[in-house]
Length: 178
Image (tube, rainbow, N blue to C red):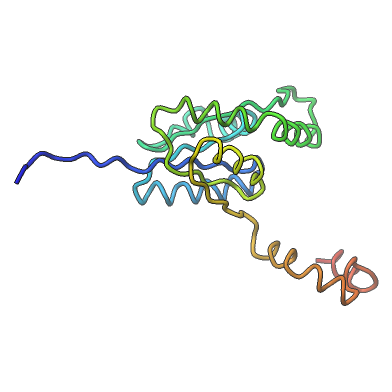
């Protein structure tokens, strides 16, 4: 029997969160769990989000462990302190609609290790699915919505049919209090 050691190549997963705090946190936790199980991870942020993460955590906060790296795609968000949250959000959304697909495909084709799988935030489904199809890479959508948010979406039609939505009367008062 040949005693030569074989080097098994780890699957390479690209993880793409929607550029919002709760989405990033959920996707980062998933990426960390997958990395812990032995997968190679490339976590893709917008430039603005990456800069914010470095500002809050320090210049070396995103220095990942071997097999876990962060990459960025351009977002078109101004880096001025005068930019309001609404302006930034609007610019991020506009950038996602106009630039995401091309920038993401460019990023993936420049990676040293070819990705074997993409996990995208469900809120980016249109763009991520198009990119995965163009690149010929399998994709999975991960919905980062909290259980209470999911149930709200799931039950909204029933609430409208029963007359509970839109909120009125004492329901509105309860919603205001809580």
